[in-house]
Length: 122
Image (spheres, one colour):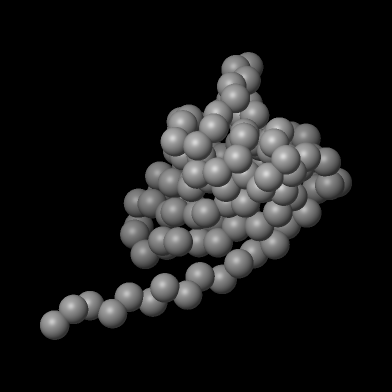
């Protein structure tokens, strides 16, 4: 007898695009699928209680981690250390889609400290 999984994920919309939570059942991690619209970017931010690993699924990303800026395409990834200022920007003409794996001891949206934001949320 197989296990029936709940595959419904609630989409949360933001000014830059949207995200859906793929996994939030573990005490030590959380997984999101994030979509960034062309020409949009997330705030420059950091987290006190988690680190992140991003894997680009589709589109072109310009990723800032601390002082380093890298361009990523499908299949490429980047690690975001806990406490490191970071941001992602969609520099392509199609939606940017990436998987974010958060690891730490707390994953609430209130662990986002915005340093710069295009949408007045600092």
